[in-house]
Image 1 (spheres, rainbow, N blue to C red):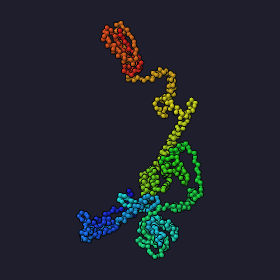
Image 2 (spheres, rainbow, N blue to C red; image 1 turned 180 degrees about the vertical axis):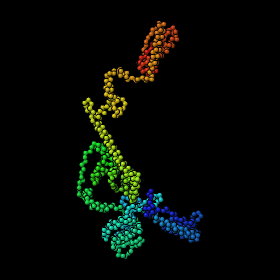
Image 3 (cartoon, one colour; image 1 turned 90 degrees about the vertical axis):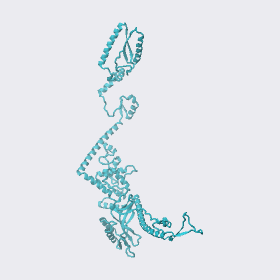
Image 4 (tube, helix red, strand yellow; image 1 turned 120 degrees about the vertical axis):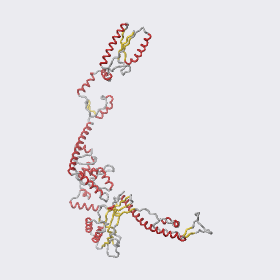
Length: 620
């Protein structure tokens, strides 16, 4: 939606809605054609007579078979009703025709609005005054005072308006310069007067006096014609300048003539011809070739990251953009080519930040406004207020930039900004130094990765060594787990020497025994408990020997594996049951479990099969 600014509106047109015609009375409707009474340009006339209809809706006939007709004037009330209605219709018709002309104007302006939107690069809408007409009215008929205006449309209110712009009025010098009776000096004087004084084509006070003076200066046989006056006929005047404001559409003037005039004036003032213009004229002057010093390692590495100490870029860059910035600092013109999407707009935005940081002014031109809008959006937010886009006929963007700059300056003092700039410069230099140091380390590490490794007097490339280690990973995996890159060796040289000597000092059986898991200290028998067990064992042995001596029994020491303990207990239970049937025999059985390296070994423990468990059996 476009908002129409009331203070700039020259003409405003609202698109009126259609108004229905007043409906005729019922007794008149059948005598009129409905399409006629809704047409504001044609007065509806009643029919002279109509066929009389019966109650059944069919036409009535007389006794001879002929249709029976009713005349409109047969009913005086019907005639009076028609005459009363036709007055209302005529009032509606007059108003509707006025509204239709407004709609036609609205449609015309809207068509121009769309056309200007589509062809804004080549067309412009103007308001002019001072129509120069020759006495024949055929060779010349054009305003000499013109000013650019714009068309705006508000879809909410359905209003289209012609609004003024901030562009200065201009004199149609191209037309005046082609007239034989006009001196170029006169045209230049009129242009200077127009530049000094502001004569708007719509002004009714000062502009008529300017037009009067203009025709008097242009031609002695010229006459000024005021507003609403007709051009006189049969006079000896050759040209007429009529005060009559008009709107017209024209192709944009490319400004080539003014551009050339400005260049000529600049050359005359400075006395120097740019090499680029001299080459266009065919001089073929060679541009000076600059010898660059060989960059250092730090500079070469920084260029890969798009960084240079002397080039102040605001966005990520590459080596090519740095080279473009260097070339622009040396030559008058640099041509950068590339297909769409290769970063040309990004490069321009980066270069603008560099030049603004150096305190330079930058002019960016483009064939279309869209390209400039895209470029401004790519600039950092902090720089956008420093950029003024001249993309339309207003100074809105300039006012916005001035407001942004004023607001920023009002919040900071000059000393504060100077200190911040100095601090930013120091921080930037610190970051650049740290980046240079890190890049150099990375480069050194990367270079070392390609140095050959020496093994047993032979050189092996890192790739071959890595391939060998990967191929024999299962055999060469001496250190379990992951090794952190850059971690120091956890052993000293003496500890490492002792580790290697252990390969011959420790036997295979000892190494196997060392591989066993250490017992959980919480599950081991305490010294007090162990002494109590030994004491109990001695008491039982003594009692066993005394009992064996009384019954004249023999004592055996049996050694079994812990894996056979469950089976032993089953056999022992069966043996005890058998004593019920052999009461004459007396057997005393005592089993003592001794602690081993892996702790106590009950029948269901986790002791290894084959670990000896001692017990004493006594029987007869």
